Length: 234
Image (cartoon, rainbow, N blue to C red):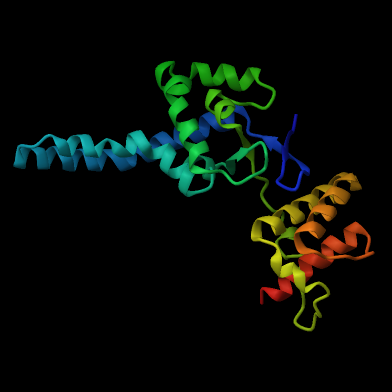
């Protein structure tokens, strides 16, 4: 069952939830990464502590073990090394960008979800919840989704404007990268499902942001905006 994520433009986009096995494998990769980071630091700390007679070096060496997931997910928009390897990502259910606060909540609940019970609580929670959430996800309003790899035919941007393209709506410059990404995702979802019900609320929201007034059909309007934004960015 896909997970519906509501964007800031009040449009629902469906993502495939990360499977339990994928999440476990991502965690194992993360443990290997933590070990690869921590062991050299711990060895160096022991050497320094023996030489200088101060144990605080050892405590510092364990910081990557403690803060690895918090730092990675906050710095890389919801991806640790393991999640990145398996194309998984933490996403907010309201479609907004993941904040440090959400990462902190997920990290804090790892103590209950994973550390204390050896992952049993997280496994049960992911299996039993409709959106495949562990306790940390429920507290933060997030879940883990699978990012689909672009196919070879999709690598070229269908909305990239040629050099001789004339901009129709200069107001496209008012749209942020996040806005443009949402428009692209909604258009892709619309064409995949042949369901155009997503377009009216999105087009209305975009017109409010940009102040554009046009009689173009919603699909043509949004596609034109993407081409305009592509040309203006050059």
